[in-house]
Length: 90
Image (tube, rainbow, N blue to C red; front, side):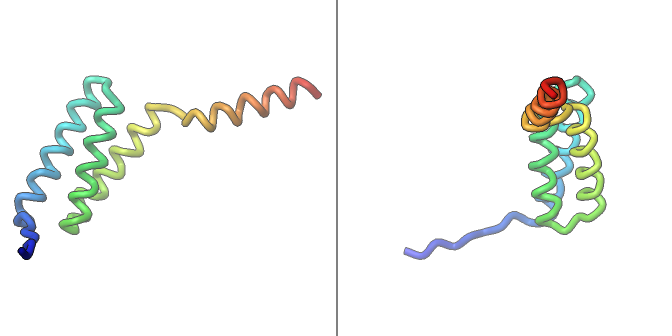
């Protein structure tokens, strides 16, 4: 038995990327940044698969904006706390 992989038409993939992008925008507007980020990242993968450079740029901008609102990562916070403790201990 041979498996044949069938890819969806590029128009369908672009449509799904658009839907996920819009979903991310709605989540972002509602203040649900983690779900928005997940939608944006899925849409980015699809935009890259179809070589949609304009959507890719828009999604990268949206991802950056969402990361900014989420704040620094926990590892960054730990590093800052460690630095503050080191400075205070001196």
